[in-house]
Image (cartoon, helix red, strand yellow):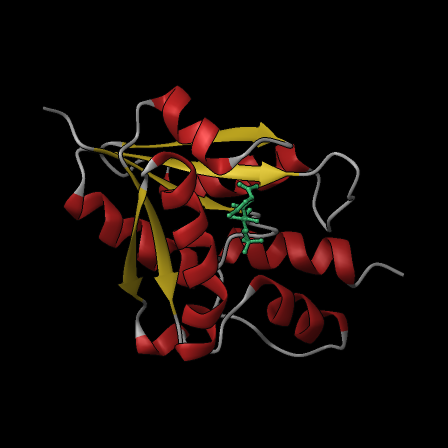
Length: 161
Ligand code: PNS
């Protein structure tokens, strides 16, 4: 039986921390769907099509991994639609666990879907999309924390003007 997992997130934008977790997930499951979930009512920093393109550019060649966009949908419904039997989330810290646990329990309550938590690489423990954007906005250097093409996109979007 093919094992299929979903790595959900906003990916606004993808960081090296995300790539680390997706790469680990790809070693555990036959197929991994990287699901960009977005609320059309919220603007975010990058348009979702650009988030998708930035993700594809860095993980598109990983065997068994694909990227898909979903709007305003319950994660458990997306997983049912995709035939996925697990959600994969990266954990950086106990704070992440405290945030993620109720969602994992709610998702299991809704459909029985399990969440697999993967400890992220310590090198990216401090890396989040929001912190990276803040640092770039105020002129800091985040090279090594995001892929080069993402850094370029961040500079274009946040440093203009
Ligand atoms: O990258 P993020 O912003 O931390 O991702 C959070 C996300 C999108 C994975 C989470 O908000 C989510 O699962 N949203 C889908 C709506 C849903 O199913 N909500 C109930 C969760 S128990």
